[in-house]
Image (tube, rainbow, N blue to C red):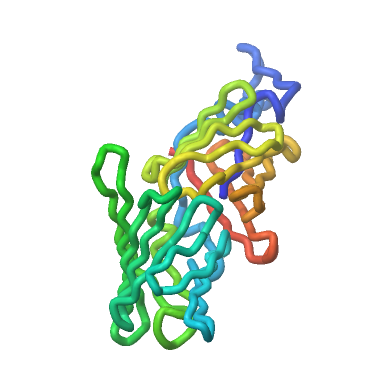
Length: 269
């Protein structure tokens, strides 16, 4: 999730310092929105936290799995059949044995992602390799490792990526008029957010169909955000700019768990 802003909505009485204005009464850096918010921001891992597991898998008596990651969830069987994960997206699964699972995700029938999951022999860790075809014909792959935090047998249980904060992409913000452009450099995800509380589409690899952000101001230096997929709210949050313009603090939470908040602290580069 992410929250943002723009020039004209939060500081209608902007006063710029005159050349002879003493420093003690000159406006702070975030009295100029473009100066305060525009730039490249890097996550401060030591000051950030995301509660709970990265995802959970529950195994039903009929052999179907239920995946939940705090943002969305879906049910699927490992029988090679297609199961809907969104109105235009499906997943199929095959178990090679008790420790290897392969899944294929399709959007409107076209393969958009394949995943290989390998369970360690002692069941304590899960190795994951994902591959996504690119527009130029190449394939983008990613390797990650998850540690079991609940459950004891097989793939079912709660799993956490201990390095998920370390791999968080850099964020670039650019404001113009009543729109803020955001881009995550390492993932290629981006959006142009209209700051009137309406839903603005997000674009780029790895996003579910119809992922949107809505942003509205709450006072001078805070914005409230709502993220949706297929029109359903998946998280809510806020973004605050520090008085010196050096730090952004993002908080977000699931509507079902408002007390379990992720806190992401960004430092300006």
